[in-house]
Figure (cartoon, rainbow, N blue to C red):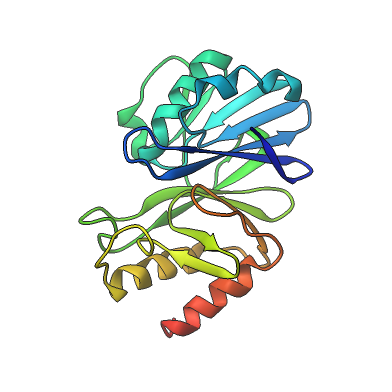
Length: 210
């Protein structure tokens, strides 16, 4: 069910109920408990989380990943952290909005990522990433490792017939805000990438002369 990615990070993967694509949820252990990051809709998993301690927050990175997060927050009685740009979609007594640069549950720092053009059809990428104290990054949709040794950027591998400009926009959006020395990334889709994430980003930047 859960697989350890690092000593303090666990992941699980389930097919999205609406679109069928595989989605990753992450559990990040910090101090006296844990936080959930973009948990997919999987009620049976929520019942097994007690072994990790108390849930100190459920964090949404992208408005499109909200369904599982809303359920997890309700079942676990944990605060639900929602990006400011998606705050109108989700309201409630236990909902907390957060913005670029904020530090939230798990001492995670929020980094806003936004493309200048539509990437998923007419919809631009607009999401948050989270940087932890070990300089590792949790990412939603802007990029993902679909196979060993290759870093794809949205909408590669998702939307047939995408344009080079769309992929370039995603590479540019992440590159503008990516902190130095981030070598491990945990993705909302695909395979988490350890130790060489920044190297792959640099390679894609060179490909597009960015």
